[in-house]
Image 1 (cartoon, rainbow, N blue to C red):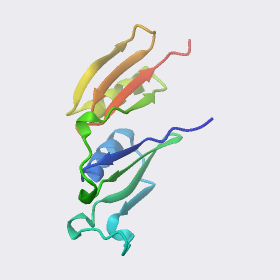
Image 2 (cartoon, rainbow, N blue to C red):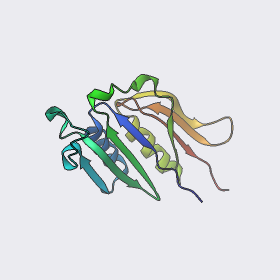
Image 3 (cartoon, one colour):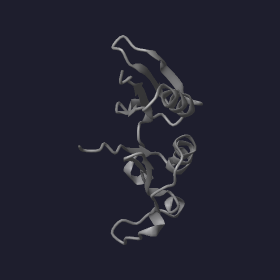
Length: 141
């Protein structure tokens, strides 16, 4: 079965966001690379962007959440128009609650977590970094 490994672009706060995600999911970063770690004369990086994240990866179960900061010369990511969502299938109602309330802290809840019309325990929100998440738990009765 294929794994889904979401990748998110940030406007310079990828490290801050991923430290927040790590505080909710736990674990350790598999990779943290900064633009200064891979100098390339064909793609010069401004001094003020040298410490920004070129690639960061946080393993979560069998999946990996990845991201980078977009260099200013490539323009800004429109975080309020990001229409992709990250969907997490929790293993228990308790895990669903922990992830929902942890990740939505400081963000905007769009659908409070509760029993859904289609029979799962579901909630949706945009976190404080503008990333949209869906949390779902379906009982295996």
